[in-house]
Image 1 (cartoon, helix red, strand yellow):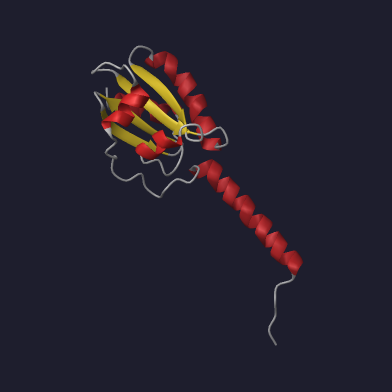
Image 2: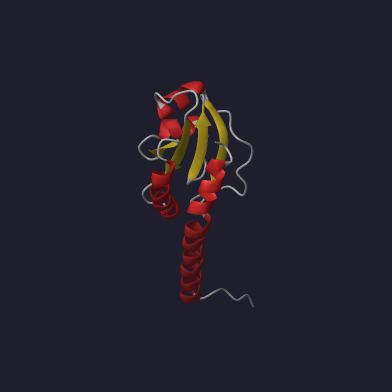
Length: 144
């Protein structure tokens, strides 16, 4: 005789799985791939659209995220505390993937939060997922 799960236990299992999924989004990132992979080759026109009138030697940190993404909101807090120490050295540009999906597509965004360091029309480095203020500071410093 075959035994089937009772509906009540199936509902509890589904709720538990949903809770684990939400927790992993917060701690790992929203739809973040296992590894960031190599730095993408972003079209120059996409970089120009995002960076604007940055000088050749200016370093720009471009952060892609969304207001509904917990790790994105956490990185925003880290960037806000980091910005005063980087004033004049690094400009921070934040892109909402919901408001500018075409720009996100040009940068190859598959998971958020995702950040790029750009100088002279080229992507120098990229990171996927949450980073603390100290990790961000080290990352930026390694490309200055």
